[in-house]
Amino acid sequence: MPQLAYVNGQILPLASATLHVEDRGTQFGDAIYEVCAVLNGQILDWQPHLVRLRRNLAELGITLATADGPLGLQARRLIARNGHRECLLYIQISRGTARRDHAFPQGAPANLVMTVRRFDFAQRVRQLGSGIKVITRADDRWGRVDIKTTGLLPNVLAKQAAREAGAFEAWLVAGSEVREGSSTNAWIVKDGRIITHPTGTHILPGIARDSLIRMAREAQMVVEERAFTLAEARDADEAFLTSTTALILPVVAINGEAVAGGKPGPVTHRLAELVWNEVARQTGWRA
Ligand SMILES: Cc1ncc(COP(=O)(O)O)c(C=O)c1O
Figure 1 (tube, helix red, strand yellow):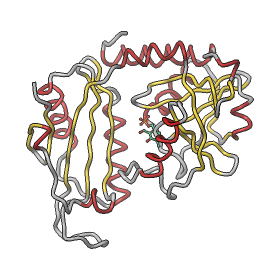
Figure 2 (cartoon, rainbow, N blue to C red):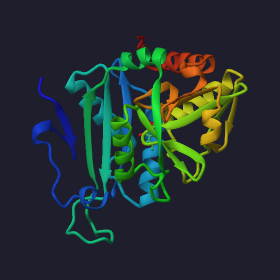
Figure 3 (spheres, helix red, strand yellow):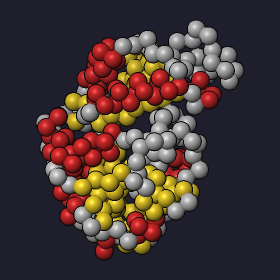
Figure 4 (cartoon, helix red, strand yellow):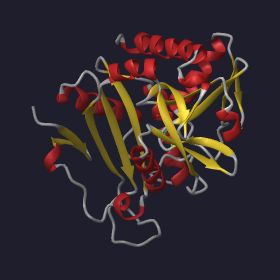
């Protein structure tokens, strides 16, 4: 079955699904996006993704004519037409197509694009046993990384550096403070306390982060939303990362040095149980 994509109201073969060369997303990175996990054909955390998408559009003053209901329906239709049970849904909305000029164009409707691609979530469950490695890079992004825009060049370069170092992720560090990964949120555990950078303008408010904080607190675990340093991370009892596509993964090395004895720890293990139980509750999917 050929892959299908959604472009401005139409579902087309991916190979012929295109935007105009003067799409503002291409020329200026003037676009926002979401990535959602789909398991058992069900979109995980759809409502929080929708809330963040709307907030990002509002922050940038992009108007999307499509209302929430039809957007969800079109996304589900695309998933069903592609026939994938486990996949990632990508949604991108740019300010539209217009003659190149920095200032906002008048009367150009937003461009809405959606794609899906197969994804192996069982691999994430397997990675819980081994954990993953991270490196660190300077956080040289702009000042509003809380807005999920397609302007991801620093993230791309950091992720590539991680790949070349044989690591899963690059943690972005400002001064001595660990902010987040290039596409994941960063966490440590010390003396039973679970610590992650607070929301604000220095990190992306991850959907997986938010949902884990809620679940951990419901389970009577202590979560501190505060900045932590690289030295604290090296000295932590455990470290891990979260995102829609990573779910939750233990970090066992930072810059080639073992964290927590180089093995996934019990708090991360307990949190992973909460995460995967929530996946099962929402979608019925089990590894
Ligand atoms: C910079 C950054 N931080 C954190 C995340 C995790 O966010 P979420 O949990 O919504 O996937 C992402 C996801 O792409 C990201 O790009």
